[in-house]
Picture 1 (cartoon, helix red, strand yellow):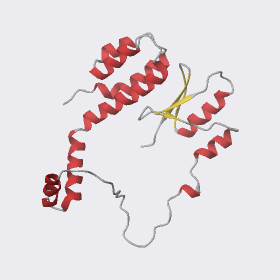
Picture 2: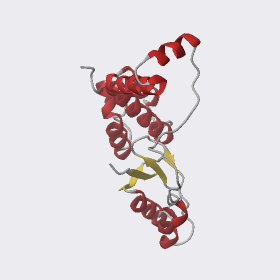
Picture 3: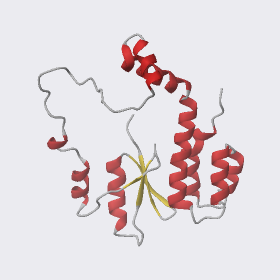
Picture 4: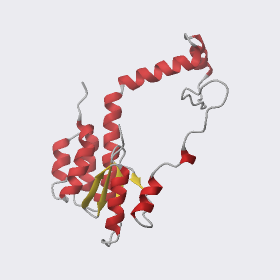
Length: 189
């Protein structure tokens, strides 16, 4: 699934879509507006820092991957298989238990992580939705009436109260935040 982005100027939604589309809209708008556009990654609510200098082609060119960013040719030896080695710290009794598991420590840890991901999928999705909504609320609505109460309702899982606290907000902001937060109000099965 491709990432989507949304740009705002003040309280108005400027554009939504893929990064190039949103960046070009932000570039075009920056000359007409007193405020600088702010761009969010929809999945995380993170602000995306874009280099909007130059003309539209300059902006688009900077967003496209270059040959130098391409993956280097594979050398001899074992394929990487996407495995990343990192350090973890466990007590000796944990290491002893892991070593006794079929396939060794790495296989046992992978199984445990997969199981935890499956068991916690709904809670993880809810947390991601809350975090994305919080980040956008902090950036766009921190000064608006009902902000703190809306945050409390977001984290306590009260969708009606959440929406009522945003009732006086500009429509573009409340609609966007509601969309981001919608996954946070899913009830556990």
